[in-house]
Every structure is written in structure tokens, then in C-alpha cells.
Length: 261
Image 1 (cartoon, rainbow, N blue to C red):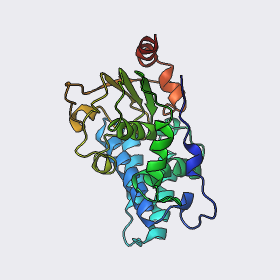
Image 2: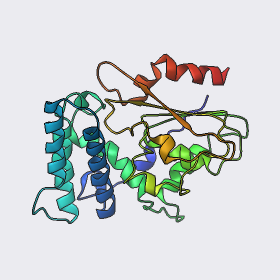
Image 3: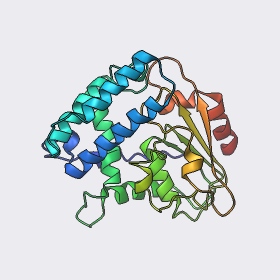
Image 4: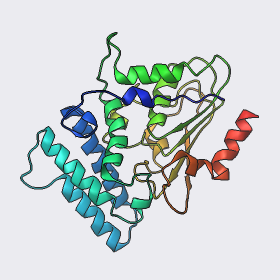
């Protein structure tokens, strides 16, 4: 069993201005990510109190007369995340105790999708992340389990992978977010990687950023007819977005254990 850790690649010194050191493009992607997240939850059948709270979050992202520059975006994102963390049950859905922490985590998605931040060798941040994960794959058949942004990384990496992947499991995935993630996926239009023999995708209604069960509508089957199979799980308590919370479900862990046997 191998674990690909690319968290260190997000650290950078001397960043200023926007939260997590984002530039204007990355800040705009982050705002777009939050906007679609809110709209997705508004599309669900919500209690009136939750719906009103979500509408306040959306209003914080698009206040009248607000500056459209980077610092205007930063103010809107900070206000929206602060409001979002006050919405039950969504405030229990992540692992974030403060707006700054949530912004930092979601900013990683924006930085990956911006395809920027070249190193001395000219490799962008997303390329370095995929290279880190690629180093953990062998030529042998492998079961791949990917969480949150990791599902986007895995999807793009496996599109180039030549080894067999009997099972791909994605949990808490934002892949199918239609306005921010899906249009930026590579390759495009997206289809199940040819190396994948089975794809299970799990989502929780109270997960703050996961896409709803529309992945099969957004991602075409591969040449073997393999398409993502989305299944809902319901977690109790706090922090349902975490990988450990998903993996506590037998319907999630069971296929992984079988695939590793």
C-alpha cells in the first residue's frame, strides 16, 4: 500500500495579499468554486432556514457595487466562507474551525486548476503534483483511492497511465462541479481513463464541496464502457468531508478491501 503526499508542494514563502497567497486568477477560481458549491446546495431540498442562510452566502459573493479586483474578490470570499461556516448542517460538513483554514484548503483546488506557479525547471504546480503521485504507481495492477482534490489529480494522471487500474474509488470529489472544475479538466471533454476497469464515486449530502450524483452525466465512459458509479453515503456527526469519515462506511471500504485481496 502506498500513500502519495503532495501537501508540501503547496507551501511557498513570501506570499502576500490574498489568503493563501493567491493571485487574481486563482482568487477568481476560488470565488467561482464557492459560488457553485452554494448553488448546488440551494438546488437540494433544504429547510427554509438553511435556504435563507445559503442565499446570504451567495449574496456575500456578489454584493452590489463591490470592486472586481483581486482584493475585492478576497473580501467577498472571506465574507462568504464566514457565512457558509455558520450554516447548519454544512458547518459540520468539513474539518474547518475557522474561515482562514477553509479558504486555505479550497485555495489548493484553485491553485491546481490555475496551471501556474512554474518552478525553476518550468513545471507548473499541477504538473509537479501529478509527478509526485505518478511516482507511487507501479506497472502492476493498482487500486486507486482518491479524496477531494486528489480525485481531480488521479483523474488527470490516470488519463496518461498505461498500467491496469482494476478499481478507482473517489470520495468527496469536486470533479463534476460544472462551472469551475469540469471545464478545466484535462483531457477535455472528460471520459473515464482507459486504464480503469471499475469506478466507484461516493458523496455525502452534508459534504460542503462534493459534487452531487451527476458524475456519470459529466464524464463519458471509456472504450470498455466503464463509467463512474455514484453512490450516496450518510455520515453522522462532524467533519463528513474527511477521507476517514468516508472510509468508515462499509460500502466504501468493502470494495477497496476486496480489490486489495
